[in-house]
Image (cartoon, rainbow, N blue to C red):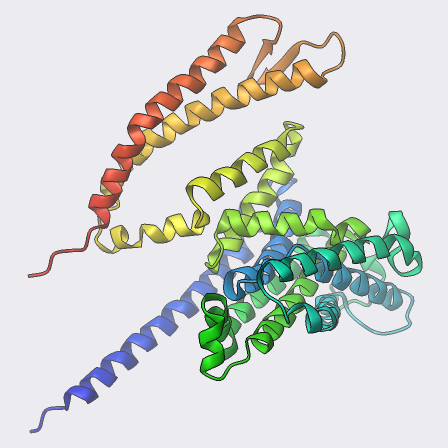
Length: 433
């Protein structure tokens, strides 16, 4: 009996590996769908569903931006244009459906927003993608400011400063669902977020998606092998605009109002923060960044008026210390996971984390008391901090928080090298005999 040739054995091994990867990929999407279905039944607080709706929209928006920056290397300061225009078009179509001019159920509105984003992405991308790097970034900034100012001029379409409103309850029902409750809207957003994420993941594995990575890393080499870097950027730009428009359509359905602010520089900056905090270039990075950003925006803003300052500190710390973002930090631990050495990191990481928490408590306490001194009404000197009330006129709170900040920083300076050493030991390759 003859034995298989080495080439045949190698081919069979590669096929088996590819099949295992496909099964693992399908398992991830099935698990994500199951989690999305069960979340409303687990999180029963009144604010849970509205916050998760906002997170779902932010996830689609951030993933679309990652198609530009992470996959194509195109730094855009005006990506919210396609989000906002898709939302405005979807809102106008929803108003037409509500008046009976056309038949369009609410679940199809994200497609309308996506088509709107695609059309305008093709329009603006036809000239902006001819350039790369800083020039492209400046063009995107100019387009963003142009459309933000046009929103105040073309008030018949954009509604001026007040924007436009709509009512999803007046749209035709689909299978008896009128989407008048937040729970119904949640499942609609969850469906489109999962579908859009799956399609963007599939796009990243297409030849165009692979060539976008090549154009990002070495555009001259991409030209030498026969691909036009301009057309690769254009196709990626249009795809990003399509999914940004889908997110805008979901925004119109969820909030039932669109304003010029939704396609201004602030919205474009927000999606940039989400992507960088989560991790540029990693598919899961924008998802993590969108969840973190939305949680801080929705929850932290209820406790302090300085939440934007804390978000800026988080962004600055991410760029300085973990430029790969939270997803990059997770990926760095893949060797330790495969070597089954993550347990060795528990102690050093826990110590460093507790010391970092001490530093955070001290810094936050000092910043909040400074905020009271600078901006509180005359006569108000008390501030609720960490389940206790402090008087900023007394000395002991200042000393206590300053001591926590300094002591935690000194301890963290000692613990950080220990954690780094433990990480290096846990990540070294497994010795094979």
